[in-house]
Image: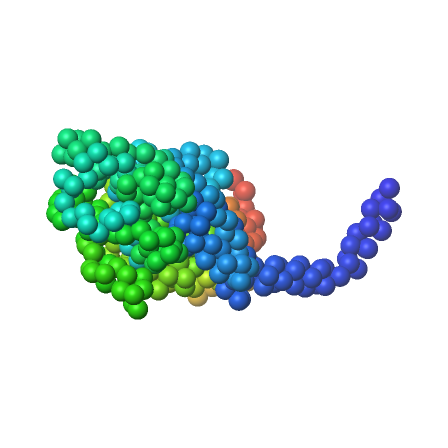
Length: 467
C-alpha cells in the first residue's frame, strides 16, 4: 500500500502542472474574449413590445425597430394589442411573467399600477388627433355636432380614451352625441358608407390610413373652433396645424389650414428587461427615430418614474463602454456600482496593509524591547553567537531574573508572531517579514538558552568574580 502511494506521488511530481496552468489560463482568456461584444451587436437583445392594431402607427414603429435589431443580431417582437389602455394593462400584468417588457402608450392614459411601470422615453413625433367625416370641413363649432354618431376607434385604445374625454365631457352632454367603438378599417368604411358622421383617429399625420381616407376616400378634416379649451382640461394635449395641401399639393387637399390636437407617445417598461437589453432598445430608438435623443434629454415621466437606465443613457448621449462591449457585466451590476466596489475593496486592502505594517512594527519594537533587557544584563556589544559562547560570571548570575524575563517575553512574542504570520491581514508575499522576525527571535532564544544552561543550579558553588 505504501509503495503504491509512493508511486502515485512520483507520478504527480512528473505531471506537467505548468502546462495545465497554461491551458487553464488560455481557456479563461478564450471565455473573456468570447464575452466581449467587439462588433457592438445586439445578440443579447430579445424583447417583446406591445404595439397596437396591425397596420397602425405603433405597429409600424415597432416593426421598424425589429428590422433594425435583426440587422444587428437582436430580436424585437411586435405584440399586437387593442391600443394604449390595453397595452398598459397587459404590461402591468406581464411584470410577473415577463412575457412582454415594453409598450408604446399614448400619454395621458390613466395608469392604475404605477409601481410596476416606468417611462423609458417618448417618441419625437407627436401623434395627431384626427376628427374626419363626410363634409366635415363645414363643421366649425361644437354646437353643430348635435345628435351625431361618432366612432372613437377600438375599445381600450388611445383614440377611445381621447375621443370619450373630448366628446363625452359633461359640457357636451346636451348635444346627445352617440359614441361607439370600431376597429380602424371598419370605422373608415362606416364613415364612407354613412354609418358614422365623424370618426376619431389618433396617429401620425402622414399615416397611410389618413392619407388614404382624405385623398382617395373623400373624407374631410373637421376644424372646430375653441379646440384650445381642450388642453386646459387634458394637459398632455397641445395644438398643432395640418397645413393646406399637405395630402395633395396639386389639388390642395385639405383646402385650408386646420387646427388639430396632438399628443405624445411614451415608451413604457415593466422593469423586466435586463439592463443590456434596455440599453439596446434605446440605441435602436436613437438610430430609427431622428431627434429621439434630443427630445428625451429634458423629458420627465409625469405620473411614472423615469427609468434609471434611460437617465444614464440620455446623460451620456448613448451607451457607455461597458454597456456596449460587455453587456453581460452590466447585467450583473451597473458599471458605476463596479467602480464603487473596486474603490471599497481598494480601501479595504489599504487598511489591511496599514494594519499589517502597524502589527509588524509592534512585533519589531517588542523584540527590540526584549533584546534591550539582554543588552542591559550582558552588554551592548555582544552578538547572539558571542552570548552562546560566553561563560557566566557573578555579575551575570545577578541578572538571571532579567535573562529569564527576556526568554519568556521572546517565547510569547514568537508564538504571537507565528499566529499573525497566517493572518488574512498579511498581504500576499509579505509573510517573509514575520518569518524574518521569528528567525531573529529564535537566534537570540537559542543563544540565551545555551548561555542560561551554563548557570549553576540552586545551592551549587558560583564562579569567581571575573568577567
